Image (cartoon, rainbow over all chains, first blue to last red; front, side, top):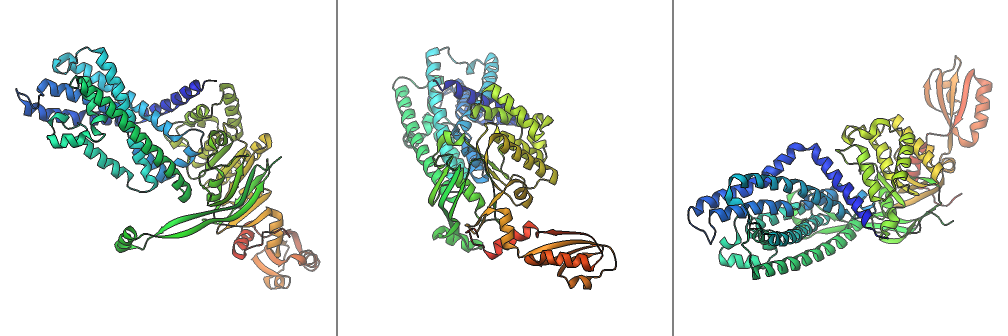
Length: 269
Length: 331
């Protein structure tokens, strides 16, 4: 018998609860939305000023506008807060009842992600549509094939960022500084994942170093796919990079979860 | 029928980092960490039959919760064997987890910002409970626990006692045959404690559930459990009936008197150790074997309006058990 209906019911219930909790904190939804919009808006403002009427590394003003609108959306669709949740669960002993249930705690985390992303990204799409009515620069060319590819890349990036965040959160089994490690990761990603500027603007040596890490694949690649900046070979290497790093992070998660649980089982909560 | 729960020479040793106070201590711990073994549970052996309610007693840090967590599969035993409902709890998987409920009195699974019914609905999905079963069980739990209008109130607005009742309902919707309850009445007022005890008795009677509960409140144990496990410093000190323990430990009985008139403390002292004297009430403590004869002498010699012979308070007995270290073997 198929287990699919059971899992659908479980996810529906988990997502429903996440949304119900969200509704209790309506002001914080607005604040998080503002946070999600402000950072790319500020970066766009800076590059808009620098570009003037010319180009910076092939980016004109309109290109920057499209890039940062795409970034805003892709970031909200792929961001993961799981390390903060997990750190709390582990340190406050809230992992106990979750381990006693016949459901792996990661499912709750995945459902939280879906709930958060659907809500916030939905609002950003609306903002983008409204802005594009009055500002042609941020309009995207109609390209369903490219959008479909972007959807796949966003899914892979979201999965990767989930496993990065979840795995880092699991470090709370060993250290009380798991969230600090995640903050450090976020700090590095500011530069290497394309949050502050398109990667084409990085000094060549830094860009080459970044290409050896997972950072470009968790944000910059799907953004450039959406804007059309990634073409031909770059699309293929982008997907390959995503798959490889996703595999690495899933493996890291697996090792950390198994060992962490053993340790938890050894030292207690 | 095989026992519902067995623990065979179960032990758990934690490695705990030792840190001296102050900055120097922190630095030293960072550079050269030192560890110390803490034997939380040592060679604990017992078996609990299906349908039994067993009280698990011990002071703070005795090893109660550690044992409970090993039985629920959260902790991995350092040595020894455990079987719960035929499963080895660690790695027992979903099939094992459907057979147990674990309620930790100080940690809740209810979603803080939502009414309890939302957590119930979530558990319905997690445990895959069919809708008609869910409705029937919920109605039953609402009636037994007197949840009434609590289901729609956000959890954060519930009192501690109301929360614990809802917590139990959430943990029992999948109708587990084995319950591990860690301090289920902690911090509750007397009425709420009684409601929880009444409910547990009824649940056991209806479904033949096996219950292992830890508690600081002796009333929980005297009201619910005919059998107790007493643990201290990780070792099982006693496994048996509560009444037998009292008889074994306490060498004395209390004679509670209501006096008519004209009796002084000094007069009473001739009959035994006067524990309390506030006319007309008095309490005498006498050797266990002398209780009957002393009572007869009291009735003959003094104007006694009422007399009863009691065991010492169970708290005193347990305290004596922890302090004295009783032999595990039955007499």
